[in-house]
Length: 597
Image (cartoon, rainbow, N blue to C red; front, side):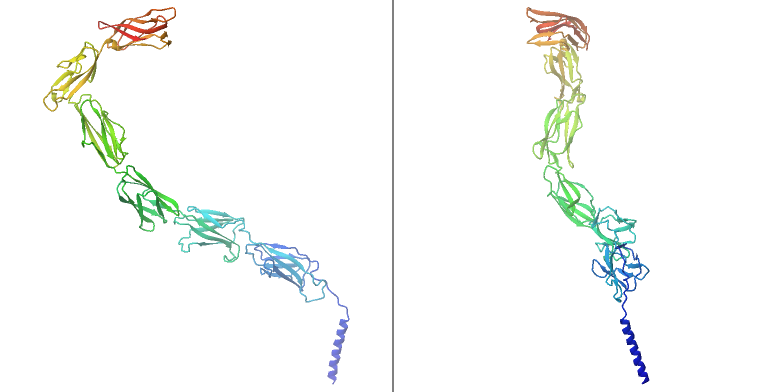
C-alpha cells in the first residue's frame, strides 16, 4: 500500500514538470547556412578532389544533394561531399573520361531534424563543372588516306599524349601482316605503314583513348579510318612486240599482283590468259595473217578497275616476200659500152623495202608505185670508159626477212686509150686500142669529112666538127663486132679565143649604146697568139651625125691561158650595133673573129 502511493507521487511530479516546461517560451537558433555564399566551381578532368573554403562551420544538420544537369538525375560522378571539416566543403570525383564537360547542380540545405533554426528553408545552391580532356579536340578526322608507297604520316595534337593508348583494327581480319603502326611522341601521333604491293586497297580503324578508360565505352578517344591505296604491278616480259605477217600464236609471260583485263584496239589479234601461279600468267596472242601492204600496229592495254596499268605495243609486219618480175623472167642484164636505161619491176607487199648497189656507174631512181604490190625503179647504166673489158654490180632489194638480187654486167672487150680528144684542124694524133686476147681491130670514122683514121689509129682533122673514131674487133669468134670509140672534136684557133665586154658604165636604149666599158680577150689556145688588131665598129646614131663608126683599140700578144684588156679610146655615144673585130695570127696563119660588143 505504501509502495503504490510512492509511484503515484512520482508520476504526478513528472506531469507537473512537463506542464511547467511547456509554459516556458521557446528560443530559436540562427541557421548554419546563414551568410554562406558559394560561387560556381570548375575543376580539371583528372581532378579527384576539390575543396571549397567557406566563412563558417556547417553543423551536422546540413546535407548536400547534387543533380547532373544533363541527365536530371543524381550526379554519380561525384563520389562524396564532405561538409564536416572546419570551414571547408570537400568534394571527391571520378576522373572525367568522357568527350565533353559535365555539370552538377549542388544544393546545401537543413535536414529538417530541428525546428528551432531561423530561416529553416534557407538553401545554398551552386554548380560544379568538371571539364573534359580536350587532347583530341584539335583533330577532326574521319578518314586518313595514304598513297601505296607512303610509309609515314604525322598527326599533331594540342596537348601531350600522356596516358594515351592505341588500338588498331584491320578491315581484313585475315590479314597476316600488321602493315600499320602508331607511335606516340609528345604531342605527335606518327603513323608508320608498309608499302602496299597487295594489288588492292586496304584499311584499318585506329583509336586513340585514355589509358584509364575503356575503348568500347564513351571514354576520351578519337577514332579514324586509315585507307592505303594500292599499287598494281603488271610487268609483261616484252613491252614492244614485233611479229611477222603469218597466222600464228605468240606467248608472253606476265608478272602481276592483281587481277586485270586486257583491252585491245585492233581486231587482228586475240588473247587468252593462262595462269601459272598466283603472280604469273602466260598471255597467248593469236594473230591473223596480215595480207595488206602496210605494217599494222595495235595496243594491248592491261587494266585494273578500269585504269590502265601497262600496255604492249604490237606490230605485225607485212609479207616480206620480194621478187623481180620481168615478163621474160630475166634474172640479170648485160650492157655494152654505151650503157642504157631500163625499168626494173618489183613485186612485194612490203613497201618500205630497201635497195642498194656499189658502183658509181650504176644509178637507181626512186621507187614508183604501180599498185599495192607492184613498183618499179628506173635504172641507168652509164657509158663504159676506162681501161678494162667488163664490169659488174648487183642491185640488192631487201625487206625485213627476204632479199632478191639483180646482177648487171657491162662490157666492151676492146678499149681505147682516150675517150675524148680535141684536135686542131689540119693536125693529127694517134689512138691506141687494146682488145681482149690481143684480137685484131678495124678502125673507122663516123664522119670521115671531119676526121679520118688509118689502119694504125692515126686520126687526122679535116674541118670543124665532131665525130667518133671506132675500134672494132674483127676476129671471127664470139667477140667479133665489139667496139669502143673516141669522140674527136675538131676546132680552129678562133674557137679558143673569147672576146667579151667588161663591166663598167653601159646603157642601151632603143638600140643606141652609150658605153665606156673596156673589151677583154682571152687565149685558151695551147700556144701564144698575136692580136694584130682589135677594132670596134658600129653606126653613128647621135643627132647631127650619121655613117659608119670605127674605133681602133690596139694590138697585143697573149700567151696561152692569158687575157688582155683593151681600153676604149673614146666613149661610145649613141652607137648602133657595136661589134668587136679582132685579127688573130697563130702558127703562121691569120684568122678573124667578130663578136657583138
